[in-house]
Image (cartoon, rainbow, N blue to C red; front, side, top):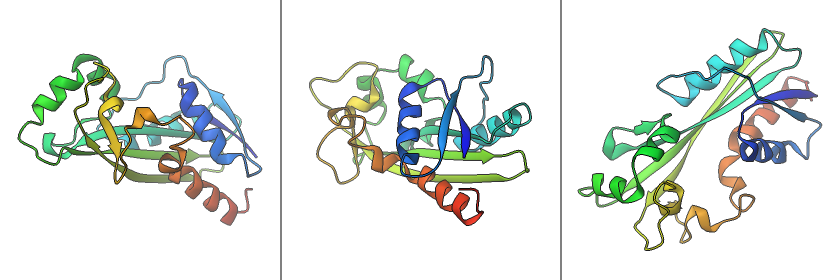
Length: 184
């Protein structure tokens, strides 16, 4: 089975491809020229993207979108992390969280799959993190102050492949459903 993975991000594509490497699924990266859906949640972005693109493509389409949510800040910045991270430094963000003793946050990862038969499959889960000050913070790289729940190391201390298991649940759920449907 072949399908398109919609993203301009090569690292996200590599992570997705690694999730499918033990299955008869070949991912092709699709980088649309002008599709950038704006919505309140990652699930809405992923769903709208695949529903829009599947009409014009000859293969099934998947899109995973990530939001970064800080409950203390009413789940800000949500799906707008890429933009907000460029505007607010790590120290500024930690200052905004000054009264929050736990400094908890989470990634919301949402995946949508659509195919030419009209199937729409959707998945979403959260990866909890905590935010911490450290002396060598990268000013506009929030990951440099994040630790996965119950971990001692910062996210940036891992290689990209070391932490894949925390971020691949949606892909594994999709494979299981495609197998149940007899598509792989």
